[in-house]
Length: 254
Image (cartoon, rainbow, N blue to C red):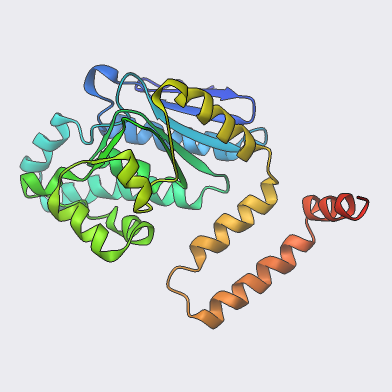
């Protein structure tokens, strides 16, 4: 089994629990943690027993963004070195998008800058009522560049513009209202609600979820006609899966 130094990986039944484990640094992202996240997601994706990956943070915060050492290196690196560094984060976002299983972020406390980007890259975001989300990069003359591709698909253009240029954190309640996150739960029952939600999702048909996730994201940028044709192809493939055939037979027996 792969050993990790800055994250924890545990198979909890059909759920892979991936925990950012730097609570003393508010789970800040550095090269190691990004590399280990990619490895853990790959491990979850390859395991036939895992149906869902859950990303959470140890301690009181989900993730505060880039580690200070990363910011210091950015300021001193060449354009080619910075390009190589940003490519690693891009690979993580692509991996989440392409993983054949749902990736859920469970956010308590703060999800800021790269931490908010990591949460936004996930398929589902569950938040505690006291959680905060934000892209404060503009305050230091920086931009949340790659995550804009995901943010723009999650909220309206005007909301996206406000989030990336204002730089102030927003509450979980507002994040849910604008469509940035999916669910908000009271702090006192957050863990129980996350377990309930993910357990339910993990019981859904793995083939149906895989086909749905792939089709939904493939439709980005397609014309209406091509999107319908892709849907037609996915519909046909789904009809041939064991899950669908068993599900129809069970339904018809009622």
